[in-house]
Amino acid sequence: MRGLRLLGAAHVSYLIPDRAKEGYGLTPAIVTRAAAFTPAWLMTVDNGINSVEGAILAERLGMRLIITDHHLPGSELPEAYAIVNPNQNGDPFASKAISGVGVVLYLLIALRRLLDARTVSLGSLLDLVALGTVADCVPLDANNRLLVREGLRRITTGRACPGIEALLAVSGKRPEDVYAQDLGFQVGPRLNAAGRLADMAVGVRCLLTDDRSEAMGLAQELDRLNRERREREAQMQTDAEGQLTDLAGRLAPGICLMEPHWHPGIIGILAGRLKDRYKRPVIALAPAEPGYLRGSGRSVGCLNLRDTLASIAEEHPGLLKHFGGHAAAAGLTVRTTDWKLLASAFAREVERRVGPGPFEDRQTDGELPPEDLSLALALAIREGGPWGNGFPEPLFEGVFHVIESCLIKDQHLRLLVAPEAALDRPIKAMGFRLTELPPEGVLIRLRYRLGLDDYRGQQKLCLYFDDWALVSLAERVR
Image (cartoon, rainbow, N blue to C red; front, top):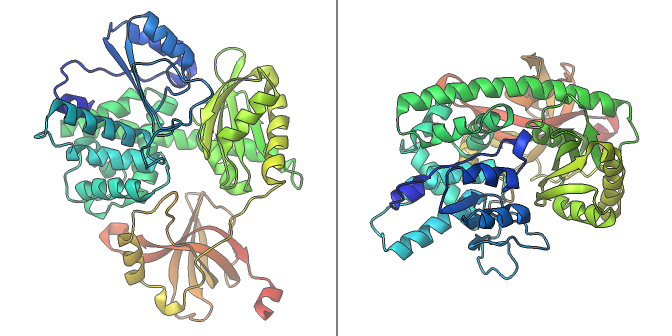
């Protein structure tokens, strides 16, 4: 929207599909809704590469269709005026990991060249490109890292659009202190909450407005929706873990779960949480249109989820009404009566491809001596970013003495620890969404990232960990 207007487009509107009623992507239902605007052109963003039926209807209704997407194409491409997707067979574009927002940026660059509009600066869009690239969790190859770095530079120097500034403010982040992870863990979830629980147009309006007062009001509404999303997500995770507790010791290689009261807008987050906890690929399902369930999957590093679903669809024709996605994440639709067939087929196919699980990546960058557990090194690591998928932040491990142990808001673990070899050097450590407390006075092994605690504007060293384990007697003897 911003880029086309910069290049002179006078009449540009947008539509966001209602996930519950219209599904994902360019479905016939969303094409029908778009036709009410009688547009000359219809352009998709981050979807459409597998929307064969929607493309047929768009042509029938007189719209010229441009598909911009980065997802993997299926066996049949939709008919369109143009398809811009670097992952089409034979496409020469080198950065195959580019996100949907990145595809649009390059389309706008090409359009600017075609229009000979050299005076139009598209650099003002890079804050949005950085946000979309990080939040979509695409691999940070050299090109994506460049886009994110330049976008972050705009944000940290006070040149972000009012919507991003407002979202950072309601997250408690100062623009000058922002780095890539803040876009992924603070701004992105607040935008996504609108699409998951209400109307995604709230998020779009927040990013489109140039009125700072309006942006702040919309950001506050998004923050409220995100708090509601967290509450629902916590209950859904409790439900899921209750199901999995009954299967302790015999979890399937690939987990597939369903509850009739789950919210279809939150199942993707749930699948990701369960994947991280149980070290297995996960599909979570919730009711969608009558007679059907919508599923969202998240995968471990060794399994391509989209290819796995393609094999299941080939082995069981008609089982999956729709599916699509990429290696790490995918979506699907299945009949309510068929979800247990899907669960068994998913477990078998995962085991055939990668084994019984769990699938843990225990690699780290090793142990740090006590003198390197410093604020200076944490700052240097931050400056070495942006970090993310495909370019991971350094991960360390070590044995620590637990001095203090407590829960924050009943859902986050806060520790005061000291290196085993330097008990006089206490350090704060945080484990988000961890609730099992280690006893004070014991030795534990942590896998952690060196980070900063910006509480009240003061930067202090903090270790951020995703799990802890007691150090056994045998390990201490070694």
